[in-house]
Length: 363
Image (cartoon, rainbow, N blue to C red):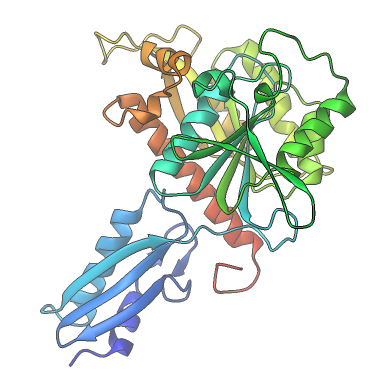
């Protein structure tokens, strides 16, 4: 007879390569059941976008076969419970707030933020997206929601909450939903900062695994307001490879490392890394230079999360309101899926380091 103790002892030999502890210690093995030679359990990952889910599943299967019985019939169900960096009463239903930032405008922050959100939601995560670029909001265009207006509801205590618009499985809010798209927004810093804070505090987000925030260019009032007002899990830095972009992006990255801000940098994404014609998918033309994002990540000792080329489908998807990540057969969608997995992976690693107690997940 196979005993639960034998199975758990076997699974203690399987280590999460990021968290550096075995799956049993991390409390990732759930609902263990044994009937004769049939062994079933649930492997609870720290994110549905885990890039190592297949590897961990195979490692569990091999551990039971090797340490318990070659005749064991093993069934492994994979689920996830997204971790969070700390317990907090502020926005407690939102587990992780991820900032997408760059010191430079025009590098594709909105494209990256939108496609990351879509990819994480497609993996099964509960995702929200805030367009915090007051002066040039892009989410209404990228999600084909120009002219859309959020509704509102009143709570039992008389407070009015904004209801985010839902599309492609994502909850969305943008200042572009509240302003005339043809009119400028001539707001001073305090007014802009207060408006952005309302998108966090006065919205009915419900439970979210990830709230992605598309920040405006620069390192100004809105950045400081968000980083000092809300519990941020980490920042993703977007750049293009040429030096004129890297000069500003370097400052944008350094801002998060300032002692007064101190936000973990999850890594660097290099957008517009090279040009690839649709009809020649194997050709790469480095029209803006090469490896600038990689060198930036290396110089700050942060992960390099991946590169996105210039292809027509990215532009077409954003302009039509159907971001390219929705097309699972597109190679760029695969690239965004890999990058999203790495972002979620870094979140889980940082959360494990932040939470002092074991098991990993603090509720």
